[in-house]
Length: 299
Ligand code: ATP
Image (tube, rainbow, N blue to C red; front, side, top):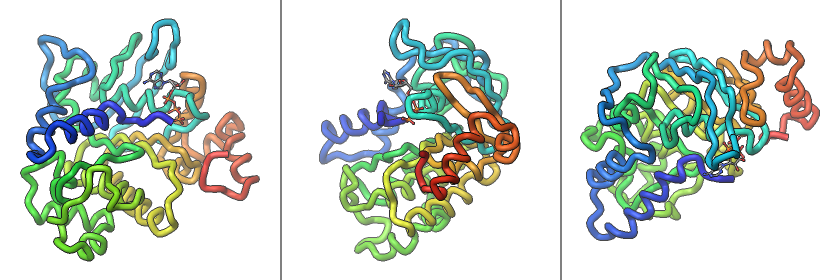
């Protein structure tokens, strides 16, 4: 499985290698802000505050020439709704999500946010209104506070604590020798995979973005971590647009709507009951999943 936010992770790892000893969150932010992975138009516009409607219009994309990964994708994500992307491995779910964050630009069609073509926008101004939670969140060598406030270094302690409480990390942080000033390791060895996910959710919570893009963890988490993550997600998704790359049907079922991605196309969109009643691909997936007793992972 390739990682959703591999470009940023690589950048952070590079940064960690070159900047050991002079860890500075501000510098890291500058690096991320000034190294877009796509070319910015010379007259790029600042994105005004958005409601958070996303529109894919006949979108095509391929990483390599002559190897389309997405083709003819049409999808409207309404402001404030949670939409789950489901479908077989390699179908193009993460790729769709990467286009929203503008790690890549489509090779055909357009992606719009509140009617603005993403290609006309300054990347920094776009990403300021987006929250991203990768499947394997990165931590960098620094304190818990630095790691949570990564997207908003000017946040007060109170705000950082609010994010920590909202994501159920309070007891963990309180148990740490120096609370939010405890230094965690770059590769996050000191935190479990569930705790790293929660920290990434706290990071996103603090920024309070209009639009959230989440890649659900596929790693097996213990039950307690799972239920904490579920509760944190409820808090985080409330009132904002969210695109969730769902690897579990149990998660997808809770979204407002589900988009089934297959072979680079969105083939069905609708609520869980609606899609089950329609008897199409989602209904098949759901039937298989139910027959297997609702196993946590996709069949
Ligand atoms: P999964 O559920 O396994 O995460 P997915 O539906 O998210 O799958 P994508 O990760 O979007 O699928 O991948 C779609 C296709 O694009 C796959 O064939 C994949 O191998 C290819 N692909 C993904 N990332 C890259 C890349 N960086 N370079 C080249 N090909 C890629």
